[in-house]
Image 1 (tube, rainbow, N blue to C red):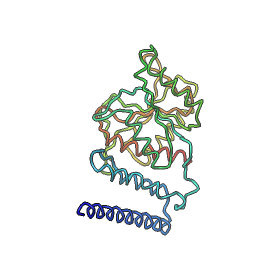
Image 2 (cartoon, one colour):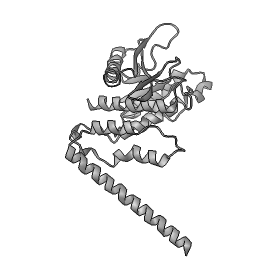
Image 3 (tube, one colour):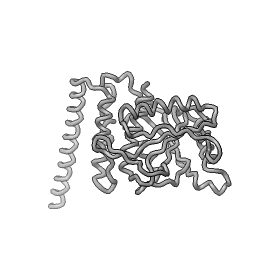
Image 4 (cartoon, rainbow, N blue to C red):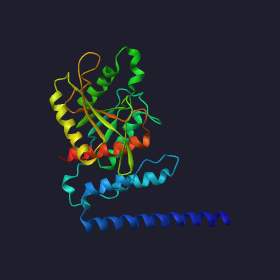
Length: 273
């Protein structure tokens, strides 16, 4: 009998929790309609309040807050026509140097964090599951191997951008903006490819967004060419191949995640244009 009562009490708590959650959602929707706020402003506010939380610490709460924007559809906002959500993935994420590490994670995890933050904005993306480092025994270089992945993505899908996530090898890659610590961002441009000018225009747009909205976060565009460097970085495959370095060995995953939130906003702005 006691066990039955305990189970009944738990069921009641679940029902109460669901009722409160539904009430909160309805309240937010009605408030948005009344205030007539933009989806951009809401998303930026949401991301600013959703910082990285370790999966062993209040993981359920993090998952709930990070996905609540799915419950609030773009039609409730005044700028619903400009909402960039598409059914098919728009961004292909991959890691040529997949073994690069941070204090407590890897660049592959950084790609997953970026994917999650893009999804918060209604932008679907795909993270390459194959590992470049496991194919080095074939005799191909890192960029030769990731090139094969990239070519398949270009030929078989309707991606808009192809983003190669790296980690820098230098230090001094932390910056504090509005009491939040970020891993600095660097764009790398290969000069030895036929799409150089087009690649540069896109990177300049991205860099401009960061400089105007988050001063100090971007280290700018590093142009590389000549002996001893790749000089192409597979950017000859498409004019929309972007190489982004996020932080360095000194950064932790919280700082990296903070930066991927802003990179997601950057793509949201770019796709909206």
